[in-house]
Image 1 (cartoon, rainbow, N blue to C red):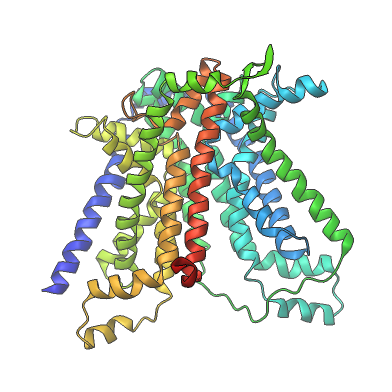
Image 2: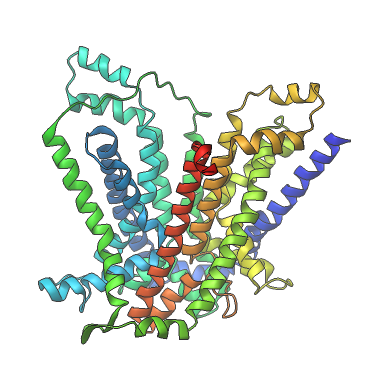
Length: 530
C-alpha cells in the first residue's frame, strides 16, 4: 500500500510538471502560423537580426568565459589575500536585473554620463559595444561560479609529477589544467551563450539600431501583441538552449568522479600575485562603477543640471508605486522560494532515493528539461496556454512560472546532495521498519539543510531580478519591482531607474547576508545557542 502511495505521488508530480512545462511548450508550437513564419524568414531584416544575435552573443560569450577563467585562476592559483571578499564582489552583478547593467553603462558612458562629463571620454556606446559590455557584466559571474568550483577539485599530484619531468608552467597548464577543466569549460560556454542569447534587457537599453532575436520577440509580443510571430521567434530562441542542454548531457561523465588526493599547493611568486591583484581590482572597479552611478544619481536633484544633494527622487519613486511593486516582488519571491524548495526537494528525493523505474526516470528528465527553456520563451508559452484559466493575470501565475523557470538548478543541488548517501540506506531503514517519510524528515533534511538554504537563496534572488519570464504575464496589480526598470527607462526617469536597481540590490544583499550567517551557525551550532 505504501509503495502504491509513493507511485501515486510520483505520477502526481509528473502530471504537475507536464502541465507546467511540456504542455505550454507544445502550446507555443500550435500557435505558429506558417504564413507568418514565411514572412519572418523571407523578410530582409531577418537575416541581419539572426546574424547580429549570433555575432554579439558569440563575442560576449568568449569575453565572459575568458574573464571568468582568469578570475577563477587568480583566486585558486595565486597567493593573494582577501579571496573571499573578491569572490563575493565578483558575483554582485547577479543581484540586479540584466537591464540595470545597460542602464548603468548609460549612466557612466552615455552622452551625459558621469565619466563622459568628468573625463571628457566619448564612447559610441549604443550598438555592439554597449551590448557586449552589458552582457559581459551580466553573464561573467555565472561563468565564474561554474569554473571556480571546478578549480577546487584538481589534484596536485599530477602537477608534482609534471615538475619532476621538467615541464614548465605553460606546459602544465596546457596538458593538465585545460584537460581537467574541459567538461566544465564546455558547459560554461553553452550556459553563458544561452543566457546571453535569450536576454533582451541589455539590448533594450543600449542596443541602439542593432536588433536581436530576443528583443524582436519582446517588442512583437509586449508592444504589438503578435503572439504568432512571438511564438516563431520563441522557437528559434529555444534552439541554442536545447542544443546546449543536449551537449551537456552528452558531455556528462555520470556523476562526481573527483579523485583529489592532495590540494593544490601555491608557491610564492610576487610578480604573479601582483598581476592577480591588478586584474581582480580592475574587475571590482568595473563592477562597482555602475552601482556607484546608481547611488549617485538617486541622491542628486537633477542630473546633469543640478548635482546638489536631494532625496526628492526617493519620494517621487514611491509615489510612482515603487513601494507597492516592492511588496509584490517580496511576496512573489518568498512564495516561490517556499513552494519551489518544497516541490523541488521532494522531487529530487523521489528521483535520487528511489529505484530507477520508468516514472522516476521520466520525472528526472522533465525536471532537467526546464534547464533548456529560456525565460522569455517560458513566459510566452504560459500566456498562450493559461490565458483562459482562472488564475491567469494573478500573482499565482507569476509564482508558478518562476518556480518552473528556476526549477532545474536547485533540483540538481538537491539531487546531487541526496545521491551522496549510501545507496543501501533505504533497504536498512525498511528492514528496521522506518518509513520513507520519517527518513526524509529525520535523516535527509537535517543532513542537507545547507543545500536547502542555498536552494531558497537561489530562487529568491533570481525571482527578485528576473524580467524575462514575467514580462508577458504581469499586470499593474501584481507587477514585480524589476519590471519598472525598463518602464521607467523608456520614460527617461533615470533617477527612479537607478533607485530601483539599488533597492533590488539591497534586498538581495540582505538575503545573501542572512544565508551566510545561517550557514555559519549551521557549521558551528554553539554560535546559534549563544
